[in-house]
Each structure stands twice: as structure tokens, then as C-alpha cells.
Image (cartoon, rainbow, N blue to C red; front, side, top):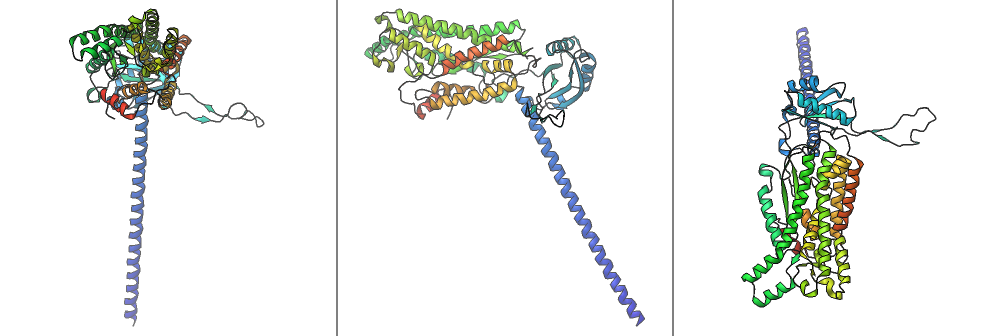
Length: 524
């Protein structure tokens, strides 16, 4: 009996032990599963943080207008030896005193404090960088507001318990602190047409297409805003199309228009070149923007280096539109005077401007309508093409091109001027606002909004003019107030030229828009 009881007790102890081992194994398995889950969540969180940081870096890279195909830079693309040389040879207590250096995919950001006024500190940094044999050909420095800075909303603490902290100001929004960005010297500004496979068309192709469309507009192509002279049209109808006399007549009246547009474009780009040379800023050959109606939307100047200051960028951006707008307006007014003085038989030999294109621009339309009243034109003249001296038509086409270049968008002259005059963040806001205004003008125009539509189709092509402007060596110091006033005055003139005039013509159909875009090589 005792042996049987002992065996039973042994079996019970064995069962208890096996159950305990199974419980411990279950607990260990559960703990391992929880640990694996925690590890997976941790890795997912780290990946999310890394992707979020990468997105911030990419956004900052794009805001600075740097080449998209060069992001990200490996290890900041600045070596440790170069970082040490910057600390010992360039930075100092008398210019910019760095407190930390962050190596990012956008370059190396030095945080610290300015020990002089921004223009003096930036000039001293560039002077010392140029004097360093180990750095002057390998590193570029930019003094700017931190593009990676996230603004914080801080509630001011009351000075006493009875003082209301919200009495004067609800929130204090801190500005981005000044930083110095170090980039490799081999990182040059990218052309507005992109590079490699990203380029929509080579520079030569854009220029050749613009020459072709300008000649077609001057000759009175079916899609252009210019019509042949009434006398030439009547003789062509009587003699039949396709003869040499008709071609020679067309070339004869087109040559003055073409010459006027070419001369005004040359003056626009010459002003850019003079301003660039004054500030020691190399430029590349300009990019011609084709238009099936105007012949050309003008040119886009390509920077070959980083501007030394916002003043240099403002002078470069404003010089072309300032000279181009003044000369175009003078040519247009002189042409109107010659038109008003011409006798009726001579008017029949003048090329004609389509009323739809004329009424797409408010200021020239008002001047031409005043000329019609002066000449006592019949009431139905508003619906017929307007005979104008070739100088007036060339000035009108160039005036629109200069006005379009002043839209504060991307790397257009207006976008560059807005960045230089008001800062990078204000320029981005103005760009968004300008796009909304253009879309509103198109939607509210009952006549011919194809001018704005075609222009938008050209400048909004990917990798063309959507890029932000490249940074200046000194991005903190604003230009003189005179540059801001000049820019705002030019913007007012551009608004008057781009605002449509009210007229009673039927709205164009979407098919006509598709045909116009197709002629420009853009599929809808």
C-alpha cells in the first residue's frame, strides 16, 4: 500500500512538473512574440522618421533650386578635412561663429551666431574662402535662413501674475535662424530645361522652334494673331494661292514685324547681360519660348553661377523686363502714331491684328480703341482685324512677352525678382497666388483666354520653369527699397497688359484650345 501511494505521488509530481514546464514555455513564447512585435514597431517607426526626414531634406533641396538629379549628396559631399579647414581658416569670432555642424543630404549646415552685420559677415566669409588654397576650388558657402527650420508658436510668459500675456500679441512666431550652408563647388546651377533625359527639348531645338513660330506669326500663319494686309489678301484671292508674288508680298510686310520683335528681344537680353557683367555673374545663352500666336513668349535668361547677393539677383531679374517693357511701349506708341497719320489707302497695306488677341490685353486695347475713335471707324470695326503699322504690332507682341516674364513664378524674371526683393517664402506664396489669378482670368474671360492658356502650358512643363531660384551667397540681406518699388511698378504694368478687355465675342471652344496646344507640340 505504501509503495502504491508513493508511485501515485510520483505520478502527480510528474504531472505538475510537466504542466509547469508547459506554462513556462508558453510565457517565454509570449514574451518573445511581444519582443518581436515591439522590435518591428520600432523599426517601422525609425523607417517612418527616416522617410519623413528625407522628405524634409528633399523639399529644402527643391526650395533652394538645386539640381534635382544631384539629390541626395553623400555625406554632405564635404570631407572631414574640408570641414576642419572651414573651422580654422574661414569661420571666426569676427564673422560667423559656428556652434554645431549638421551633415545632411542637402549639404553641411553650420548653426551659430553672426558676429557682424549680414552683408559684412558674408563678404568676410567669401573673402577668406577665396584666400584658402584648399577650399576655394572645392567648397561654396551660402549665408541664408535655415531652410530646415520648423517655425514654432510660443506663448509669451507674463511678467507678473496680473498681466495678461495675450493683451498685445497672441503668438510670437520665431524666424528661421541664420545658418551657413556648405556645398561642393562642382554643384553648378541646373539649366531651366533640365539635364540629360529630364530635358524636354535641347536648347537649340527650343530656339529653332521659336524662330519658326516668330516667322510664322509675322507672315500671318492661320494660328497667329497677325493677319495679312487687306490689299495682300484681296490680291491673293484674285490671283490664287501659292504663287511667288504672294510669298514675296507676305515676306515684305512680315520683315518689319520680325525685325522689330527680334530687336526688342535682343535689347531685353542685352540688359540682362549688362546687369550680370556688372555683378560678375556669368550667364548662358538665353532660352527662347515659342508661341503659335505671338511667335514667341520672349526669352528666359539662364544663370551660369550663383548670385553673390539678393541685390545682384534683383538687378539681373529686373533689367531685362525694365528695358524690354520701356522699348516695347515706345515702339507700340510710335507705331500707333504712324498708323493714325497714315491715309486710308496706306492702311490697306498695313498688317492686321486679330481682335481676339488685341482684347486679351487691356492697356493696348484701350489705346487702339482710342485710335479707332480718332479715325472715326465704323461701329462694326471692333469685330474686324485692326490694321496697324508693323512697328505697333512688333511692339505689342514684345510688350506681352515682357509682361508674361514678370509673372512671379519659378525662374521667370518675375519669380527671380520676387525672391530677391521679398525673400524665398514670400516668393513661393506670390507664385501660388499668380497661378490662381491666371486661372481666374482664364475662367472669367468670355473672349480669348488662349494667350494665358498657351503661356501656362509652356512655363508649367515639368523641368522647365517650375524650379525655384538658386541660392545667393548672401540670402539674408535684402536689396535696396528702390528695387522693390521698380518691381512693383513693373508688376502693375504687367497686370494692365495681361488683364483682358471686355468685348462681345463668343468664347472659344475646347477644340480650338486643343488645336493650339497641338501646334505647340503639347498633347491634351
